[in-house]
Image (cartoon, rainbow, N blue to C red; front, side, top):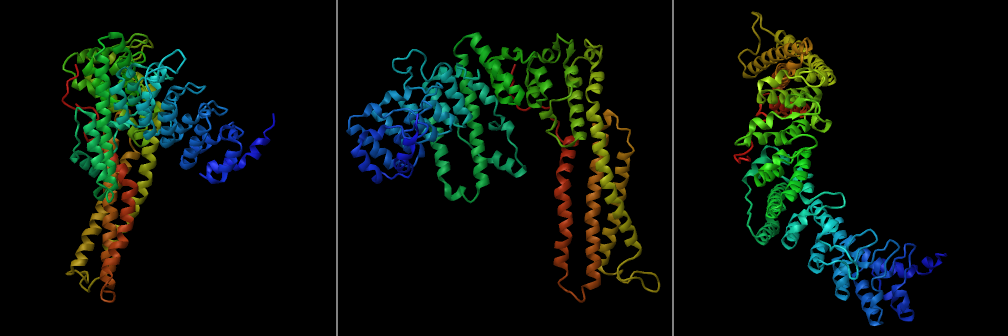
Length: 600
């Protein structure tokens, strides 16, 4: 087979690409068959090419008009080599204009699947084309393709794909619209055997617990109000009104981003509630057990506790669903998902049963499971091996305080107690934590010792020298007193820092030391080192000011700027670590009651 026609038909190809109808109008008049001919290596027609550009709208209009005029309407939907017709292409690229035009001439084509089983509706969702998806939803009936037996686009795997792809694309408002028209779609599984609830569980970032915000962002987030009406239309109208206030939102893109985030959180929570309501209204245990069970299985792994909470509120018995060989709270311990585990604090009853479950295969209780090393992706949520070891100890202590006393010394099938399992599992992490602490302490000790030396020497070589009676020349000068105080502070704080870091270097590095002792010493050492650096810079600036202020009157401002640079650099480099140390050691425990909703 020769492909020379690809070269000879290049003028038509280029015209379709560049929306140049005028250059090919005469060609099509002379040979109408060229309008529906497959002119590329991949058997694409001029209409497919023009639709695929999502720009050649005039070319598409004129071409469709001409094809219809010559009585070749049945050839409008000639497919390419891959079996995709122009409507499939329009759905892929988001060409809503072309989609409307094509559907007007043959509405049945909305139900036609390509060789891979994909309808235009599914392709629009798959490629994230929201406007095209919304339009196709209004013109695609819940019927199988004409003359073909099987399910429609809203049932079976096709329906499962549609709702899961819509959610994956982030079109939660469109998902609501689909549920309004086809509520049973939440019961369907997609090509990967996943339901809509599972896909939501895969996306913890769309729920409040998944947000990562700083102090001011959290404050703005908490101050923002959103309206949750029972009618989705009102929520859409409210959202659109907010988006139209560009005069106020554009100057503050971060505020707009936080607003969008809060709206997404509201929509995702409402979507979960709606799915749970649809499932429970079926009054079918098998359906509820399957949908809720698979949903919480995914949610435990990704830490999407809001989904688990709503599932339990809707169907309390689901708390005993087998999640990968474990019940819910044992699975939360295994996956180190503290937000899921914290649901136990919201249980009004049966807490003891949640904590006393056994892994029958290995004869291990909850404390044995807490003693295992956390999955790598959960271990890395904190910085450094030392804090990772601290987090592991926090988990072990939490579960130890919760279970019944007899379980603390229980033996598993390998005749190991939970503490023995913890020691064995964390040997590598303990060594890494020890090395991390030593490296950090050694580096900081060098800096602190240098500051001690400078501060000590500065106390005996005061600026300006001394009088004959031994008193400093600038003794009565306020700037000199600033030098004295800052130099003394630098000496004392740097000495404290050296002692703290030496305490770390000479520590025994036992497991328990990583819980409080070592983080406390590191915190005191870093804080005192920072203070000594600030004091040293102030003492240096005071010295320069005393010496040259009579000659350079404007020296104060440049000195303040210059001395701020190393202080700011130290803060940028070490402050995040310091904050994490303080928060992890002295901040609110990661284990706490998250809200007042009782789930059992």
